[in-house]
Image 1 (cartoon, helix red, strand yellow):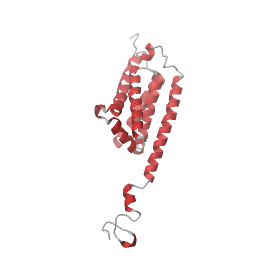
Image 2 (cartoon, helix red, strand yellow):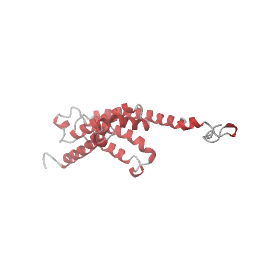
Image 3 (tube, rainbow, N blue to C red):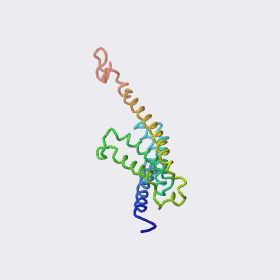
Image 4 (cartoon, helix red, strand yellow):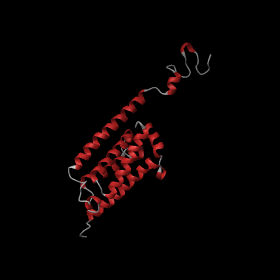
Length: 199
């Protein structure tokens, strides 16, 4: 091939596949498509894993995945799209990290891979079969790559740090059941009485 070479075709396929998967995940969060929870369901999940406020984080994650995925598939603003998608997946990986690497044990393997590909595309560029190429790379300059990654890293670190703090506080706080039972448990009360049986 002359105009369309193997590299351009490979980048197109990679962009379409990765961008499509990211966008699909994003629409699950935003609109409840493809069996997703929408803002309400995703927000509740976000709260449960420490990303608070849940709805705001669900909206942000959905927009990053939907927007970043669509832009990657189109090959438009590739540095910003790739860096943003990688940052979103870093947030997902933080949730799975305690379970190790491999996905079969609940690890961060899938999130890491789905973040690595957009990051690589941000660095390599989208190829000639892209809107960036058609538009003369006005939003795909070399200097935009480090700027996009730096901005994404700052934002992602702030979000993950806040999430980790919420998780630590939740783990340190006594559960509702523990508060009801008190320091002596459900059975033993001061003086040998039983809280379960009453007076």
